[in-house]
Structures are given as C-alpha cells and as structure tokens.
Image (cartoon, rainbow, N blue to C red; front, side):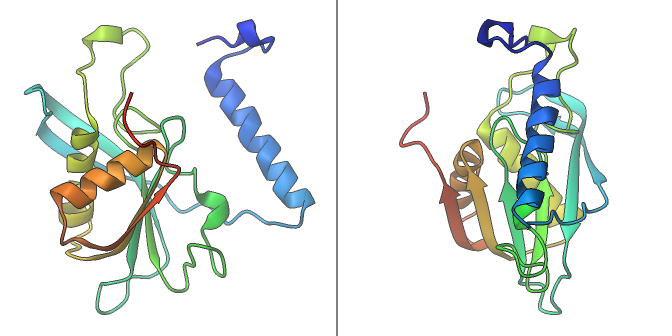
Length: 191
C-alpha cells in the first residue's frame, strides 16, 4: 500500500514504524518512558479450521507475556489490538505502575491472524490466502490462552477498535472465561 496520494512516500509498514518512533520520541520528551519489550514467543496450531471450512496446516501466533501469574492463576489480562496494530500496540501502557500494571497483572498480548508476526498472507498470496473472521481470531487466541498457557480464568479481556469486536466475541463464545470485558473505541456495528 502506497501513501503517495496523501503526499507521503514509502510503504504503509515504513510509515507505521515512523509513527511509532515519533510516538516514542514524544512520550520520552514528555518524560514517559516506554517499558522494555517482552520476549516474543510463537504458539502454533496445526490443522486449524477456519469458520469457512478452510484448514490451515499451521497457524502461528506471536505473543508476549509480561508480569507474573499469581498462585491462584487469576490475574491474567488479555489485550487485543486494533486492525492496524500488533501485539505491541499497548506497550506504552504496560509495566509497573502503568495502566496494565505488571506488578499486579500477568499481561498477554498476541498478534491477531493476519497481523504482526502471526500467520498472514504473503505479498504474492493475495486472494489465495483464506478468508478469516473475528471468530477465527477468537478461536486462535482462545487456544493460545487455554491450551498454550493453560489458563482457565482471565481477570479481563481488553480490546480496542477491531480488538473490541474480538473482545465482544470472546464474551459471546466463552462467557465464563473472563471476569471483565473492556471495550475501547468499539463501533456500534460492523461495516
């Protein structure tokens, strides 16, 4: 995707990196430090069936965890990013003393299907990549949380924009998993 129509040269990915760097510089100028990034991990699902019936031989989800899981295993918070973000979209809000306080919560961030380092269409794949839905994203992330991390309860699921759609679907599909659901900037309906 080229942004030249808006008078900006370069690719969308390059523009996103410049935006993140600019945000980091602004936050540092304001005296806000960015937390250290967690070590990325990959969770793989094999023969993952999408809602449309397509089976993906391997679906990879990149994710990070920060903080410590409580002995009762009840302090996990899942953060769901927007359509243009990735698992690092909430980074400025994660860390000791921040909104998602890692001294209190075990914070999980994951790339949605098609974003970040998760399985996504290659530039040449185009229409050959299977169509995936919000429900497919929930199924993959639910598998990460329950099978990959072995959790049966979440303190909260927090989603912003597209992540709010994902969070709402979490609540519909798995109503007893999370104590709280926080939707940031949701749309009243899908377009």
